[in-house]
Length: 146
Image (tube, rainbow, N blue to C red):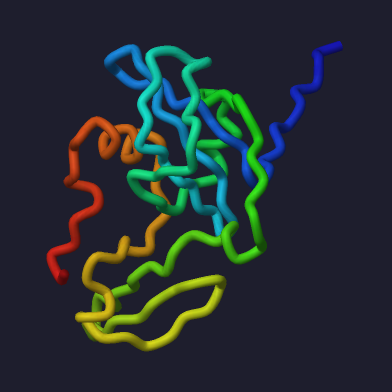
């Protein structure tokens, strides 16, 4: 009888080691709303985990990336509060009307272009997009409207 594969559970606060093409490791921490905070710290190996909660960027990530086992869970760090577990506000730009909105904590509100400047564009990222961005390729996160 074939062994049944266990489904990997995604837990709030899990810290994932992300193997990079240069042999080093980036690390990401799971937030609410399918968010992942990518730490500024780049480790020499999988045990060289970040010591502080200092992020390069926080974006949405597909659950399939976290369940794929390409990224290893190396720690679980609880959030200080419920609010801290949410990613920061993100900008949404309607591709038809060009209107701006801000998405935060499951809520959408109208916004101006000025309010959205400097915010992440709301999107769900795949593994290779996140790795490209960590490695300095920014084609995935620039929006021509901002």
